[in-house]
Length: 134
Image (cartoon, rainbow, N blue to C red; front, side, top):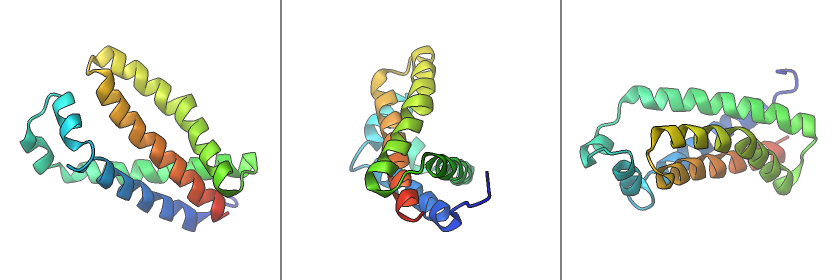
């Protein structure tokens, strides 16, 4: 699986995931709705646990690594191929498992939409990066 890995593309994809997350969960987009939806107060967003960022970076690295492998297996190229690969991963694994979790957690579908939307955009952009840099 690691043979032929596009390491630069993987690293750029991690940076993309970080940027998307910071923008997506900013006060200009979905931060306030998300914080209210998960039942936390405003102070929750003001003092995040630094370990959260470590987990996000490691998780994004693993996502990018596996998405790169999938793109190579699919032979995807270009923007459309990258979006397709990211969307396939999102629809087949992320949207489905997170929807089941959301149903049992009873946090509401608005929270699910915010979180799943972040993952869809991130995976689609990672797919583009990895396809174009292949």
